[in-house]
Length: 136
Image 1: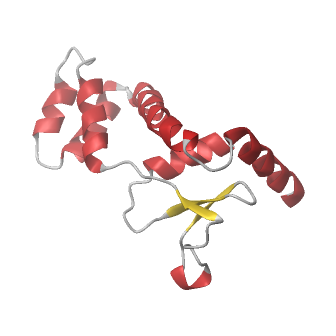
Image 2 (image 1 turned 180 degrees about the horizontal axis):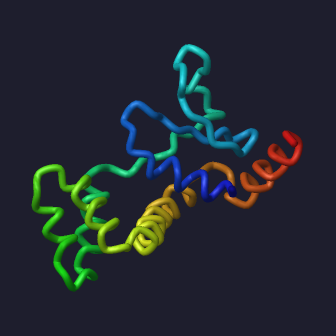
């Protein structure tokens, strides 16, 4: 796992109860399990954005046009479109292609966020590597 992978996983986490943060001092990604345990307003922590459902739906629409059978597009017009989309991906054996596409979309969005961080990504990545090396 890399720091970039952790950013993507946090961004794609669709659980509305999860809030993800980047600890700028240690270069690690943390989740808000207990608001009382950590002062998230501390400038040491930067909130990691999460994909909105409208973004996720748009990605699915753009991916669906690749399916010549039309099943993915049809899934998106039904009640509970995300569930039907997943089912169609399974039936069509397109999970790997979808996961790669979704990660590319997330990477594009996260590049803008990373550029605005107060510490360059390279420095954060060094801190991340150092943290996990010391944890072993």
